[in-house]
Length: 131
Image (cartoon, rainbow, N blue to C red):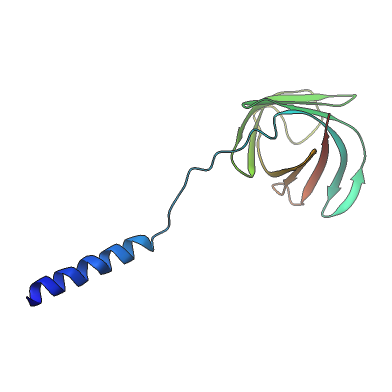
């Protein structure tokens, strides 16, 4: 009888401890970022630095970004709040060039897209409106 009680307690304990482990879920992104966006402003460390317009177009696997003097394009992998950009074409004078991988957080609220990147020593936030 004691063996059954001990075995039962061990099973209950095992079930409880198994449930306490960290669970990893694959998070899939909405496609709410897909489409064409117009940049409204750029902020560095919270300070407004530019209102230069740019156009950013996303499909579910790629991006194309351009303004009046240069363009970037490439592939993109998106999860719930993260975008990983791989630059495959660029004629922009920047530290981000062909072959660069850039990781940004993003959010879409209504018709506003916000991207934030902190990889280069400062927080760079860009605000876009749906075109």
